[in-house]
Image 1 (tube, rainbow, N blue to C red):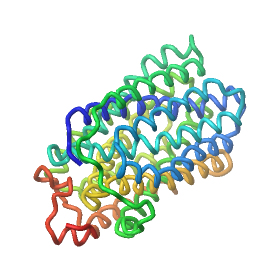
Image 2: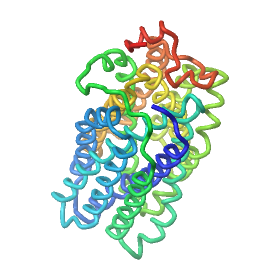
Image 3: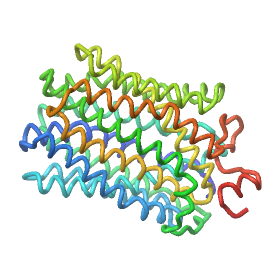
Image 4: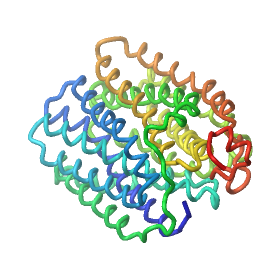
Length: 404
């Protein structure tokens, strides 16, 4: 697929608008359904899991559409569905409609993110840090959205904020639809082809395991801050703020470090930092300490996520949509299990024990992640433009199972 700067700008703008909306939703929905709809922790976990499950089921279709249709149009359809999800939350009279809205958001997110990441992969020949740039832009938008959302929340209420986010998603739809069509048609790809999953299995297994632990610890943290420390929404947001800033400013810097010391080393260090946060959470005495520890997780995500995406682009350069759908599904499968597990375990077992278990699972990634990159023969350093974009030698294409 030919890279074009207009496509890049539109996809980043749309990802930022929808991603920012999604971050606010991820934060507010568990608090909203608990405080205003009377949901139990188990029901909150189930609601989160429904969105993840529908996103999981939709991702193979999203990958096929991304590889066979205009990618900006696929992303626009996803943004539209995500806007419908926001509107559904705004109008939901109770939990059943909220579950329907969660399903729409799951499908919309699958279409948007698979397409946007495939478009970003088109830029790797020109910018080896394209995925780090995407991560930073979305993270910045997330925290840019926090200011008006939290300022307006006392006046508009949860539902008013959800409605405003729906409007923001429509802006993303317009930006994508106004993007000129690509002059080069995507290559065909079969959604049922199993080769990509087999080749990527070592990496996908690590992603699923660590996503299980990270999603679980993330939901536990929300519930813990609300129920154990009795914090209000704005106070909880301030706890997450340092980590959000880290995810905004660190991706490009961490990509530079990756260039110097290698992906495997950065992966191991970042996983260890995230595991340290989860372990420290068990004994953290106050919200300020938790906020400082959360920076470790923000930095870990900023380092590891672009490595995952660049690895997919290298292994499946001609079926990037398929590869991104597999990567997303691995994360979602783990995330769905982790969220449901956290909702059930919270308050029913030892807080210290749950944190220790999740920390141990994340720590496994410090060893298994670099091993998976080595097994897949992923370039340890993105030392030259195009290295991550699938500009491979013939032996590399043969390893990946792609035709020359």
